[in-house]
Length: 285
Image 1 (spheres, rainbow, N blue to C red):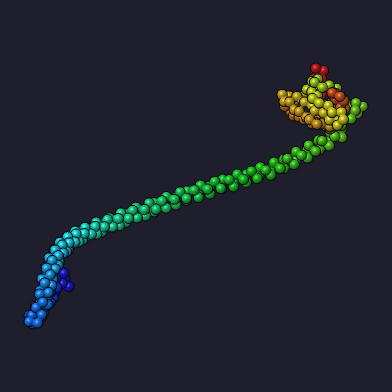
Image 2 (cartoon, rainbow, N blue to C red):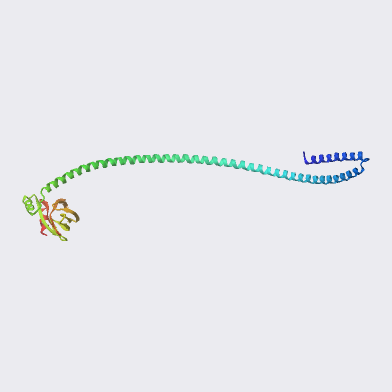
């Protein structure tokens, strides 16, 4: 029920009540005048109160009608704004979908291009790797062949050195008498030396210098100047042969120290017979 209907119903109820009261007053006026006066006063008071209430209700009704009008206008404006927002949202979603679709196409193209490029590069790398592996395999084969050859040559060289050492070892002289005996055999030339510390001597075309002599351990340190090269021998034992190559023809010399004294060593250098002439000349120098 609307406020207007409620007010009308209230007014109608009031009218009925007033009619009932008036009827009662009329019927009982003869017996209760005093009561009638009281009732009349009460009726007038009620009428004034009802009039005031009706006026208040009318004002509230007008205020409610104004509020309802404002709310309706606001609701209509809000509905328009909501409809406009929906349209903007629909447009934005459509634009976003289109952008995503275009980006997806571009991404698919880029991926396809990248796959194709990667496949081409991978194939090129595979071919290059295969070629390099083939080349490395060939080089490894060559190196293996060279290594086998080197091993064979090295084994032959070791055998030759061993044979030479054995041959020379059997001819090592341990003192001057044995050196004289080897000289008489005439298989090699022998040149004896007696060197003090810090004294450099030229023997058989090479220079010898004593660096240290250890009489207790029977060891010594020696510097050899062979051609243009200096070679140091440290911690050598007495009667231990030192072999080295001399000259362009790489002639094999052998040096043996027979005794180690304080700051002094004595021994000999042996050379092949074909090196005897220059060696003798050098010894005289």
